[in-house]
Length: 473
Ligand code: ADP
Image 1: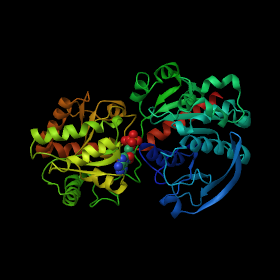
Image 2 (image 1 turned 90 degrees about the horizontal axis):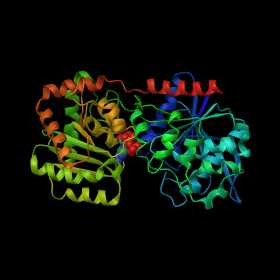
Image 3 (image 1 turned 90 degrees about the vertical axis):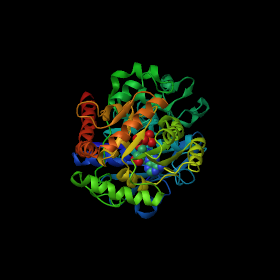
């Protein structure tokens, strides 16, 4: 079975968040299970593409409205990622360094999708399943079904995975001309609230869709940035499959970024050594419990609540706890968190994206806080478990599915229900109390590190879904 993943991100080629991690790992694990999974993404002028060798396997052109554009399909020569990687290069559009935030983002992702389909149709590259990730590939399930240009692919299965339903790729109907010959009686499938909505079009047109956790599948029916009714209507097509951890990248035993490698047998010593190094670097006291936050500093992640929480903790638990944050996002949140550094001694924030530092923090922190408003799966808590770092999470989405409160049987994490300061303070107090009981903390660390959130199981679930779809055909 040949599966082609379409995505905007793929670690280590290009990553902003969890989407990159998933697309960099899932195909590799699927290949280990005996199918042929490949990835295609836009070409980005970044470290990975500069340092690897690519062959042009196809050159062609496609039409966006009245204009033709040329594109190349570049294949990474050695399959060094554990799967074949195909990059779509379009001069001036898909050859730039950033993944998002260009003013012509709509054109960027529409051209990407058109080029992929054109390449597959013309080159007869065999695909059994198009696996489309998020809205950046959301038009593909529709075009496969309803564009005469791609009619040769009409019977090919399409699966859409929703990593984040908040972003939907909205385009005005004035951009309808961007699409090739389509069956106009099906135009309604593109529409949601009077604009072209690629995520909605994907959910309506795909053979099946998945979300990255079972709880998120439920939540989309009541909170999905306007698509609630659609997710209710299409619920029979949906499955929740939890993300996994790529053991080659996230493993404290082998991680080359961290100061000292460790297994669960020496977790206390291992984390101590990592913590001492990082505390020295950032001027923090390693004797105190260290709570971290790593991620996008946006409302979705509850990052706007962190400053208030940290200030309150410094008053209530004076000298009892340290915070180290890493992230970037909305300028207002960044500025407020950066300013706080001037007033507090047990606190540091690093604004920016730093993959190596994130590994070092997972290995050294005692706790990670995730006060998310929305969390489709969340990988940070999974990495934290693997590194023996106790997650403090709001009970939502994938956090609800993967973190059991330590007050419950076999529990290991700290959960709170609502994004209210009082509840977050109670959660931090529980963390401080747990830290005082080092024996219990170390038992929990061993338990967390023994949990299996590897990709093996989830990769298999995706393959089972593909098989079901293909056998129905
Ligand atoms: P998202 O909603 O952002 O995709 P996930 O929890 O699914 O959230 O994935 C976040 C991923 O991005 C994790 O691998 C996390 O370590 C990484 N990450 C987020 N922000 C940063 C940052 N500033 N520096 C390094 N890694 C980051």
